[in-house]
Length: 213
Image (cartoon, rainbow, N blue to C red):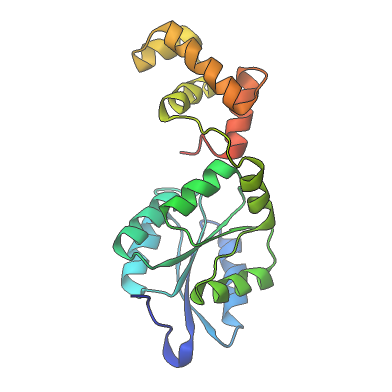
């Protein structure tokens, strides 16, 4: 069952972001809206999960990159316990792999921090009404890579080590696979990402969100 709005239909909002300036701006935007109430703040994913349990807000504004526990893990844990929670991702990072991961874990909307405060406020209202909001840049990223073959977990494990500067032999030792297997996975990675070389592949994977923690 969806959590009902508070007194007189007030939308209760939990803000999760590790940057004080961002929290201050969001708090100010929410506080002046007659139909909204800022009920709590969290600085990391772990705090977001705990405060959701305590406060049971109608909407959570969730950053992704945070210490202790990131936003993706927090989305997963909140939705596991509260399947109908309204969680709006508010992040600096687009990238189709990152967006899809957030949506599959249970995020209901995805906004970038370039959004205006008015756009964020309208997304909060839309979320309570059961509508999903997607930032135009995020939607463009999804459309651009629609149908593209995703990297497998094994390919991502190779690429993470490439990003750390490991050569093929060192990657093979670290993953307990042969050097030929490493080379095979790299060929697959380059093809899937349409990358010119290893460095280019890492850059593309970072931009698209494949190498997020």
